[in-house]
Length: 608
Image 1: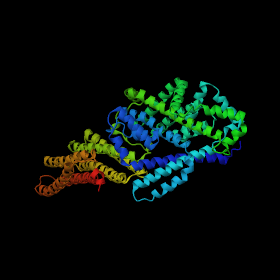
Image 2 (image 1 turned 60 degrees about the vertical axis):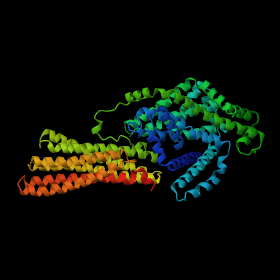
Image 3 (image 1 turned 90 degrees about the horizontal axis):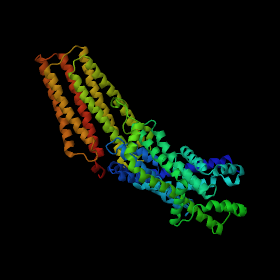
C-alpha cells in the first residue's frame, strides 16, 4: 500500500471539511429558525413526552446531541425546565442525533451527492448576498449541506485501503476474530475515535466507508457506532468541568443514559443486530451483512475484478458494480437503523425512570450549602457555549438571578441604616453588603463576557437587539449594586465623623426607600415577563421614577430649612442628602432597565 503522509493529511482535511460542513449547515438552520428555537424550549410543558419530542426536534435541527445538551443545561434548575425534565430532553436528543446519519444514508450512496456539490453551491452562494437575513441563512444551510457531502466523498477517497496492506489487515483480522471480545474492542475504538474528532456523525461516516468497502463486517461496524454514542456523551462532561452544578448533573445524565443503554444492548448484542438486519430487510433494502462476504469472496476468486471495483476503473453499469452499490445502500441503511432502534428503545424504557435518575444525580453530585453568598452563575457556563440563539435564554435567566441578588442588597443597605454604628451587627452586615457587591462585579463581568461571546455567533436581527439590551441591563444592575454599597460607605463616613441622625431623617430615608422598593419590585415583574410586559407596570415604573425625583427635590428643600431651624447638625444634613442622592441614582438605573425592556424585548417591538 502506497499511503503517504500527504494522503493522511488529506484524510484529516476531509474529516475537517465534513465537520465544517455540518457546522455551517447547523448554524444556517439555527439562524433561519432564529428565536423560534428559544421559544420552543422556553414553552416546553412539564410533560416528559413533550420534553423528549423537543429533544428530538432540537437535536435534529442543530445536528449535535452534545450541543443540544449544552442548551438544556442552561434551563436546568430554571423556571423553564427542571433537572427531571432535562432527562427527557436528553433521551430525545439521543434519538435526534441519528438524523444526520439518515441524511448520509439516504443521499450518500443512492445519489452521488458529491457530484452535485458544486452545482448546489451555485444555488447557495448567491443567497449569501440577499438583503434578508433569513435568506442568507438558507444559503448557508445549502452551502453546509454541499460541504458535508464533499467531505464524505473525500473521506472515501483518502481512507487507507486496509485490504491492500497485509500486515495491517492481519492485525485487524486478529481483533476481528475474537468473538464477543471483538465487539468490546471495536466499541472502545468507537469511543476513542469520537473523543478525538468530537462528533459521532463523523465517526458514523468513517465507519460507513469502512463497512461499505468490506473492511469490517456489519456486527463490528455496529459496535463502533454503539461506542460513538458513549464517546459523544463524554464531550459535554469535559465541557461542564468549568460549569455549574446543573451543567455537571445534566452532562453526567447524558452519559448515564447512553452508558446504561449500551450495557443492555451489549447483553443482547447479536440478537439486537439481527433485529436491525430484519428491519432493514423489511424496509426493502436487503441484507446489510452480504457485502462483507461478497467483497471477501470476490477478492479470493477474482482479484482483478476486486481491484477494478475499488480503484474506480470499473464502469458504473457493470453488473458487479451495480451489485455492490446495491449492497452499499443496504449497509448504510442498516447502520442507520441500528442507532435509531437503540435510541428509541432506550428512550421508551428509560423515560419512566426519570425521577430515579434525578435522585441518583443529586446523590452523585450533591449541592453545597451556602451557595447563595458565593459567586455562582446559575444558568450559564463558558465551557458550554456553543449554540448562539439558544444561549440567549440562558443569559436572560442569569440576568434575572443577577437582579434578585441586587434586590437583596437594597434590603441590606436599608437595614444597615438602622443598625447601631460601630456594633458587631453593623460590621457584619456591612461586610456582607461588601461581599455581595464584589460578587455582582464578577457576575457583571462573567455575564457580559458570555453575552459578547454569544454575539459572535450566528444571530437573527431580533436576537442581536436582545443582546444589546442585555448588555445595557447587565451594566445598570451592577450600578444599582454600587449604589447599595455607596449607602454603606456613606454610613461608614458618618460613623467616623461621629454624626447622628434624628428620627425625622430616618423616617424620610425609609420613605425614599419605600419608593425605591416599589420601583425595584415593579422592575422585577417586568424582567420576568420581558416579551409580554404589562403596560400598566411600565406606566407605573415611570410614575415611580417621577415620584422618586419629586421626593428627592422636596427633601433637598426641607433639608436646608431643617438645618436653619437647628433640627439637626449641618454635617448630618450632608450625609443625609448623600444617601438621598444615592437612592435617586438607584431609581435612575432602575428606570433604565425598564427602558430596555420596553424598547428591545417586547414582542410587538419586533413587528415594527
